[in-house]
Image (cartoon, rainbow, N blue to C red; front, side, top):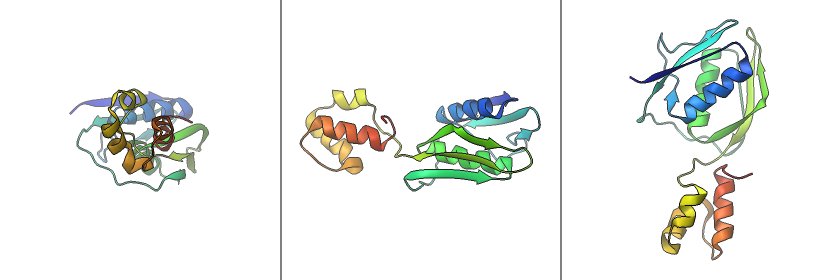
Length: 153
């Protein structure tokens, strides 16, 4: 099984690398090898899993707050996997206390701006309708889709 190890002493850099790895399809596994080592040096092994499925989370503001580091990283992993974007400036990491991270839950995008612009009108309308509804202005629908999926702020 393909894996990646995230190692860092700085919690901010650790979370930055962790989130990037999750966005690339590497996930927390509840195994001895996948358990976090949380001392001065933070280390976790993440595993590639194309078939892993996560339940959705309500859209909007999200705060993950947990004392247990493994549970915290599992929750962050889940949220990132279904479309959350986190503000790393909000990270509070106390090794013996709470770990807190705030962000926003978006819909997971199926298409990029470039993919949407290449679609013919009928395919485009059918593709964005589940996310933003219907309309006659392609630019407006594209902008709404990009906002709803966190691709544009």
